[in-house]
Length: 396
Image 1 (cartoon, rainbow, N blue to C red):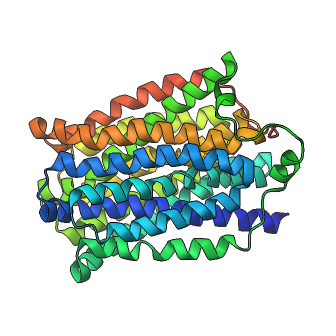
Image 2 (image 1 turned 60 degrees about the horizontal axis):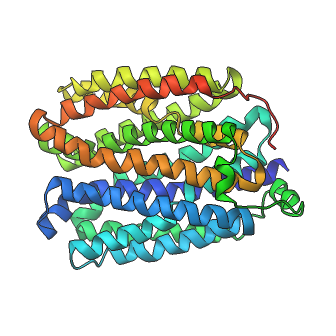
């Protein structure tokens, strides 16, 4: 069982890496897309919003299918869908078709976080659940890190279109790995129980379920507004406003991502040891403080260290959402809950922040706009008071 759990978590992490790779590639491609298609910053930023809109719809579709047909099977389908339309993005002749391909690729991405988290939570023990879901979150950052380091040389050799062509390769790897991973035993047991699986309305069929669903959406909205607000425009802020070269921008962004990876690992350990709520509160406070500090920095060395700690707190919580959702919803709707609730927050927060930030930046600069992101973590801090502490509990 231990060997299977490790293989299943690794498979889920590889899939989630595609998510991070794709969205970071888009961030580095924005300058080229703006130049090629003659659009402004806000229009180009809308590609992230469009991708996340597709992810929201894809999360609803693939999540309910995964509760009916199986987590591993549906994840494989979603990766194939993602790979086809990511490759199409490399050949888009105009902005309109680029937007369409990004939406369709987003449909496939919509399954990766939620179903990866469902798998990790279902194959791990209660004592290690947050560490397992955090390992899936690490996969996302591995994808982001690869994109941060590889984007500049790929753009230099092939242009921005080359980024999307190369992005298909990990999808092929993910499909091969998943061919050797069976479904989680708890899913197979519940599937044979006769209960109705994959029912979206079950997320809102009682006052308690409504409360849990709304609060999770709020938390995920804050998480994604903070993450996408920062990471979508960080390369352009460092390159365009602070004058760092594209290669240096990639290095600075990579250090921020390394901070995120360490933060995710620390969060998983803290959440399993001290509890879910103390871990979230610690990181929410840290995120708000570090974003404000980072927005005031201009010295390259200070930006390097500041980015590390900002990344550590701002995205360290990502694995925790998988744990929270898994412990609040039963197996027959866990895939639906993970994909629907997280992607709802990702769409609301992640789709709005990349568009709002350049609007604020137009009058006050990107530094001020990024600093404004700190305010939203206060909302998340308060929201955590309304969820029960389920550290060490068995899954339903």
